[in-house]
Amino acid sequence: MPGLYIGSTSGYSGKNTVTVGLGLAFQKAGLSIGYMKPVGAMPVETPQGLADEDALFVRAALGLDGDPAHTGQAMTPVVVTHDFKMDAFEGRLPGIADGGLMGQVVRAYQGLAQGRDVMLVAGSGSMYSGKYSGLDAVGMVKALGQSGGAFKAVVIDRFEKELNYDLLLMLGEQLGPALAGVILNDVPPAFLEEVAGHLAPFLESRGIPVLGILPRDPLMGSITVGDLATRLGGKVISAHHKTDRVVSQFLIGTMQVENFMLHFRKKKNAAVIVGGDRSDVQLVALEGDCPCLVLTGNLYPNDVILTRSEVMETSIIIVREDTFTVAKKMENLLTRHKMRDAVKVRQGAELVAKHLRLDALRQSLGV
Image 1 (cartoon, helix red, strand yellow):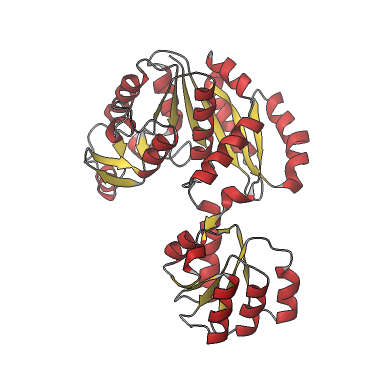
Image 2 (cartoon, helix red, strand yellow; image 1 turned 120 degrees about the horizontal axis):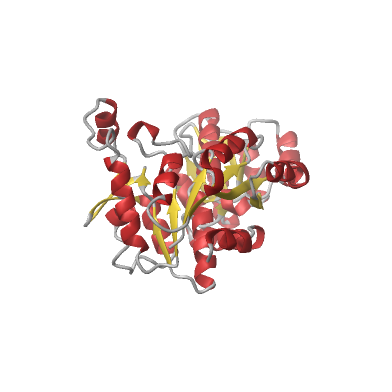
């Protein structure tokens, strides 16, 4: 029974998106799939014990939450907590030296694989994460490859200033024939031609199949106004019924109004981060139909702004921090926000179906 490990060169690279997209594509082709995330880094309590938040989400997205085999502990045999790390660092964690933890993963994999056409195994962090506990992805791919049946890996590399081509070459050497290929994710429009015309052929010439180049999609890096308020620790004070609007970028309103208007016209679905005392910028943003205002310094707007926000149906979020701090938080949120809502699931599945060479991957797996 073939299996596929979905790993990446770094965290927050799109493993959930690709896993769900591949799973739905395989199901559409009539294949029975199993899923696991061997090492969980987002612990949550369930009636059956500790589980991983990401794994539970992917299980539901793939329609496996009603499958009795896919319990939290079966899908994620190792859940990393603070105590787990401390025990590992201080030599109290059993199973590291003798490979017992890896054996635990292999047994869980074999149990879930029963009766499946293909198994999807999602990584956590990078391909080297978990080395301290003997559970890094490179070692896991090799261990699962020896458990019976064909086992391959795909590695996702997300574009952040550039692609990690050196690391992809190193992984190609370490994984050898077990590497089914790589996926170049979140490539900005300005770099698509360079990546497709130069980098991809280079990797192919070095024996590393490029299974797909996924272009940057604003929706995949977006967040709802309501979720944004929660993540920022803020409070929505107006247009509460419009907190489902989508934010895909942000603009800082510290400049003069004329300059702000010039930049604002170029930004779509941009939240405006501005001091609570800058009513001039706030009014321009409201008239320009931004998805929300984020007012910093715990300063409330005047009545004119509040009334106008209700009329324009634009939510206002009040936060305590200063503008610079909030902007840094926003940058991290939009870069690392998890795929959690149905719209993103559908969009991610469409991206995978459209841009990945699924036929080549199926041929590599023999399914």
